[in-house]
Image (cartoon, rainbow, N blue to C red; front, top):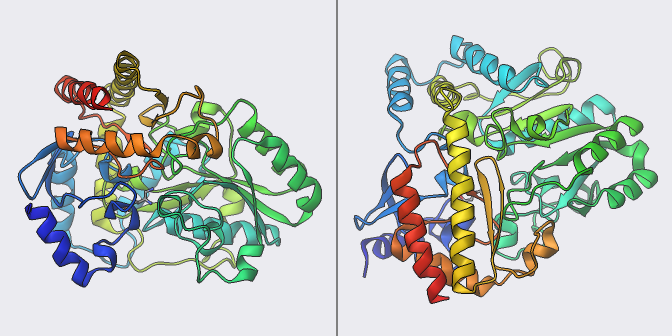
Length: 426
Ligand code: HOZ
């Protein structure tokens, strides 16, 4: 029995499902998850001493890889000065300035502790600002475990096949309207019927929680137009896409400006940080300037701020982001070549440093139905062959893959070698 298997057996006695977040329990791929003990650059090492090239990167945050020396130094220095003050610090303003410089639609920002907190606060703000209750979201988009946003959600909800979560009051769920992702006509019909009641549309501008699905042309700007005509707010959930799809996020890549943006993951560089930001006039409705209440004891935590600042500094320096995006391009091309050589039906999506891998002969993967139709068994077998060979992918066909600035030629060659054998074994 491996050390990880022993540790998982022990963890299950104390933690629900042996984990603290559902997807990492390996339920949809089977087997025991390796317990990780350290990471460095593009690599992680488990408790059995096995090393893997990491494409999970803590589900996105580690844009500059594991334990980047500059990030670690900044965190250690901040921790030595004090772990939390519950009072304003310079680091909060410094992080806000960096985010605003990269994402110009953010005129003002509220820092919180997770992506879930960011989307929860954005919804409340949108409802408080417009005086309306209904929200439009898209099937298979996941915005954290916020009650009204768990309706037809992606990520673990899809991975575990939970259609809707018990515990979400019917009245709350009823205020959430859903249509298929990338279907602007369906969104138009909903607006024709409920337009005056819709507070906001919330969307992952590149869906990253039903694997990785970019928006089709006309989808995001179509949503912008519908919101403008109806007086609703457009919220981009860039928790996953922020600083990944482009340094300025999906809104820069697709040139569509939302009213509010939710951030998380990369903004904390691996420590818990989220943010909601946007038009100053809308943000002014948040307490203490406005009546929409939002607060948090650990919000703007100085250690987390230090990690976020250092991560953004490294990521945006000397072509680092561009090099990571180029690695992702070469990786998806290399995987596609090897799948073709092995005669395995396979497709990829990629935007910036985010990728999706699909076992399908359908060609383009543009919506939830396309992902659901992929060969789940082929994914499972490929996943385990990659894991055995030393490549760590997310243990779910509904999660995206990520690349960091630390992924180099050695990591690429190792990944493609292992993939060649994994495809051949399929
Ligand atoms: N929901 C996150 C990924 N989209 C976290 C997955 C996990 O850690 O279980």
